[in-house]
Picture 1: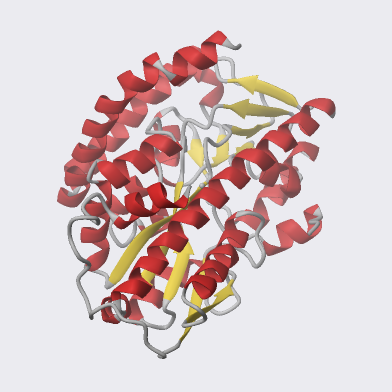
Picture 2 (picture 1 turned 90 degrees about the horizontal axis):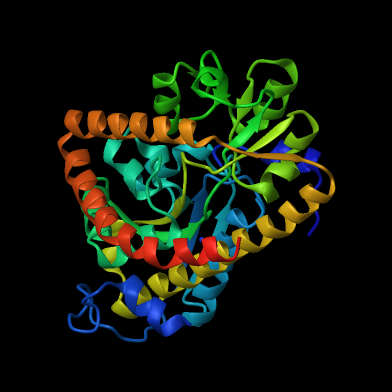
Length: 373
């Protein structure tokens, strides 16, 4: 399937990753020892016709396609007992109404990213990504083995939802700029499309975060409404055409180092399912996560090579800038945790696991990649 910039931007709504091992992990650390709660597992003839509403535009490359991939796996594994029809953002409900639609039973499932729901509970932001947080594999490790999923489930239970990991964008890029960033002074007065916690960090640096829907970003850059924007990575950024109107492409994406995506299920409905169908949903989510993450990594790598051939100016943020942004990020996160008890609980878990895993990554991946530079 081919996408033009025109078709891609037209559909953009908002925002921006060996089965047995993954299956066991995604079902939970104690899955092998403890039975699932719910009706006795049995093969029945009952069939379910479900709807999945998403925050992604219809047929959105990789992220939206992963929803269809998930639905196909569920259908095949369940022998057709669960059929899921996927709707892109705006097709059935607006993209930012996914959370409420699923919790109320207007649709059985949803897909998006938890930080979209910060207005429901600020703590949800930690389950997607936070500035200078953890990368994709570290985030998944925290969620699956470090207690993060239990906290995520606890928070979502209050909203009649069950969350599942539903993909990962991988390490994102730092964004497109119409000025070079040589020092912190270059961030002062900068108008940048940068939502969420990253936007609050930019504010501390003297910049101005601007909220623009995805379809408005290109025009905003073209007309000078914004000086810079973040989006996702080379693949989606190129489809959006940002290389045509912005001079510099910066890395790394300090604001989103490994963004976890989500599938959500209406909890009342989920609890009523027989155990085999619950396991099928979780197994399909795990496989779709693998597919999505691998797709993002592959397509971004392919597109980066094309960008280099076409002469796109790729820059790295100076160390001085990253060091200061990291300090501001810690201040933003601490302020969030101090203002909300649930955010404090999740942040403490997040921070503890990050302190555990970073030293290991430092003597493995970090040294390895430095050795092949």
